[in-house]
Image (cartoon, rainbow, N blue to C red; front, top):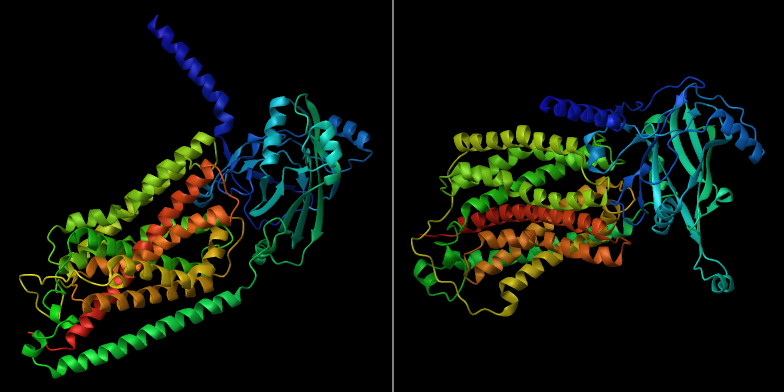
Amino acid sequence: MVWLRCFAAAALLLTVVDAKASSWRKIKRVRAGKQYEDHEEVHIVVNKVGPFNNPTETYRYYSLPFCQSHATHEEEDEAAEEENVSVSVMRALEKREAGIRHKHYMGESLVGDRRESSPYEITFMDSVDWRLLCKTTLDAKQLQKMQKAIFNNYFFEMFVEDLPMWGYIGDTAEEDFIVNEVEGNVGRTYLFPHLHFYLGYNNNRIVSAKVTTDMDRRVDITDVTSPIEVQFSYSVEWFEDELEWKHRMSRYSDSRFLPSSFEIHWLSIINSFVLVLLLTAFLTIILLRVLKNDFSRYMELDNDTIEEEESGWKLIHGDVFRFPHHTTLFCAAVGTGNQLLCLTFCHLALALAGVISTNRRGSILAGVVVLYCLTSFVGGYSAVRLYRQMNGKLWVRCIMLQTLLFPVPVLGIFIWVNSVALFHGSTSALPLTAILSVIALFAFLCMPLTVLGGILAKNYASPDFNSPTRTTKVSREIPTEIPWYRGRYFQLLIAGFLPFSAIYIELHYIFASMWGHQIYTLFGILLLAFILLVIVTSFITVALLYFQLAREDHRWWWASYMNGGMTGIFIYVYSFYYYYHRSGMSGLLQGSFYFGYMSIVSMAFFLMLGSAAFQFSLVFIKYIYSRVKCD
């Protein structure tokens, strides 16, 4: 009896596997740039649907009741007679099966793409006035789903090769006030069942693609209490396009479906640039004049006279190079910041060089993941090098902390947002294959390179800190009575506000690209803005550091790091303002992704700018204390 039960269970398992086989199958995509023969099949690939105001909240295209099979020849001929049109096109010899998943690159999975086959029958160079896709009856449940999608302003995304196309599922229309009062309605809901494809070709290659809806063929689905028969159809228009294939993505910055493309905001760029230059020049002049006076005064005084001074930064020369508390954490944070700085510069440079496609969000995200792993060598090397210069002995612990300092918060945020996406059935939830790919990159590329960098720093980097003064055994007492404007919290506020004000205008465009449908193309300006941000942050941190030393506070290590990183905190605060006052985003799913991943972005800026500010501060302190006589 036991073997009979096992046999029955195995048979049931095989039945389930066979039933699910079609959903597990994947097909290869058509390679972009294919040269077509006349009348050769052109595949329309469907991707996803979702509310326009929530770009991250996306679902499978077939989560809505669209056609998954093409109408038969008999059904087409019958519908053509009713429409009073002729169907004289080259029909496919065999019907395409819809809903079969395509193979995805890692970047496409990261942005929530779920490309699937569609039943559209389109052949190269064959324009079609009208064809029936399918005729179906939508029941009350399906109508409610469609109506809800239209109320939420759902859009769909399709592809021809690698060319995206967008359109709206339907629309709502307000009626006359008197009619609304009589019928008790607030408006009508219309479904767009007809799609018109505009496909451009050049040298037998498809170089442009666009899809539009036909308002004249819309279907009123306001009443969802009774089933409605809907006739889905499509038409195709081929035209010769002068656009070259290598420039086929250039028009997406000006797509009418997307919000208007970024205007050349040179005024805001010049404004930020001038502000940064003035601020930097002001700080440089002030510091040089003050330091010059200090150097002159200290060089003229002997040691006994200096001890009689009431205040001054030279009085703490025996404490200023006293290493900070939590040395391991500090070195790991500096190393991670250096790694992220290297990643950012490399990513922007590759984007400018055209190695990373700036028109595809998936390429940008995949580039970040791969470059983070490749630059992990920088993080491990710089962390262990600084740790050994601070007389650290547990360098293995430093490597492990540096390796996990940034990925662990990312993992925590990812678990939360991915769980929310899975609960909502959204394509924003990463598939298992993408998760395993990222884990493999981290385990077999990121960690080994981090360890390699740490080992090289331990064996070959100089362990000498080369401080220009000797550190006393007993630390000097720090004055506690200081004005409020020289206090720690006010310094943090200034340290974050001034650099943030220099990038505020450009930040709006970056947010609109990250959390909207706009395409950011000014990566040269972005690189310039990032360089200016690092410079301004470092100069302001050095200026605040001077005032801290002048009040005889030698605890500058963590202070300089925190001052530099405060811009990241301001960016996260600004994200709340943008969410509630500059975007139309809403809902738990979109909010989780937005605030979760913005916290990661803000943390990355905190680590990057904090690390840069600390290293500028270290150079400044070594310079000023090497210029004066100290015992």
